[in-house]
Image 1 (tube, one colour):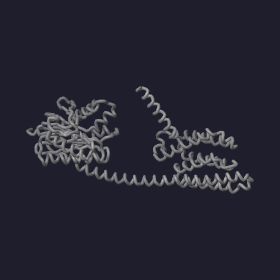
Image 2 (image 1 turned 180 degrees about the vertical axis):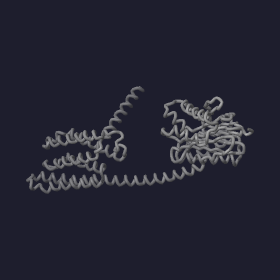
Image 3 (image 1 turned 120 degrees about the vertical axis):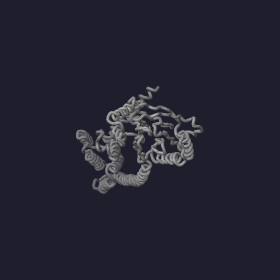
Image 4 (image 1 turned 120 degrees about the horizontal axis):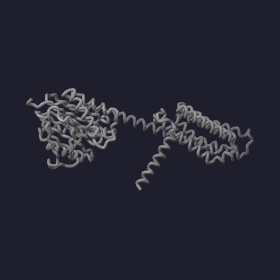
Length: 468
């Protein structure tokens, strides 16, 4: 059953690809028309309508014989269209718009010819005339379609006025008059409906453009405000700190900070689910709460800090009735390399300078805001003792996903290998990693990849103990 469904999906995809290829006029993928959304839409409308009209002519070809139409003229028109198609294909459709104009012009000529030399204005022409109005309206503009419509009305009016000189039966005269009035009414209504639709569409587009521009300005302002919350890296003799943050949109759903309090440093990296303004606003809530707990309330026990932060955040998102949980890691380090880690971010890497090797620290803790934490026993605490030259690196999902997706990996093997190369290369050339060097290193590796999430990372390298 699963195989049948898979085959059906593949067939439908093949049909869809073929339909897209057909509606795009067999153009090369890099053709300017296909790269321009409006021109591509107009091309598809034209190809689709042309195919529909051609199908009708094919199905009702016998009517042409009954109306005693000049078949040679129809065949000549078809040959000219085929020749122009071949010519455009050879020239990679460089002259496609000229070709489009010629085809429409020839089509109008055929229709006028049929109207002149048939005894009455055949109703079969109505669809073709009206569809040409639609094509001209979308492919070119409203005024060309209106001029075309007026020209056809004048031609038909001339034929109506000359019926007496042609000595036609009175019934034929009445039919011509009736078809003329019908065409005038239906064609003008068609053009008017198109114009009304275009008016509302353009009005809506202008509103959307205005809304998007206002939203973009608001997001840019929010992004500038958020940058003011980026960490100020404390200068000291014991640790090197560095960080990288690349928002997916103008604002980021990631949060990072480095807080110094007396003889301790607190490193925080968080990732609120989603990205955009809502996630960015929540990161500011987290920032405010953490600074209050660490600086104002003078909490120094990181499990207690995380638990209180989680419970405040849990109340906020439940009150707002949203599901923006967050993965957040909280690290406390002293001046002698003692590290305490808790939280729910599980992308933590430890570089052992003696072994010249990266170790992945794996643990699972509850997401921030997922549930109310009533006891610190629900949190996992990791303790490490850094040696001079050791480093800790931790990052959000956005960075890991880039490597897993673009290297087609199911684990972190390639990412760990790249980190190892970086740390070992720096170890051979110098004992310390210069500030701003690590972000440029990461940018070098991810610049050629597209990412679908905010990217943030923090690096800390232990230099020397306080009693050195």
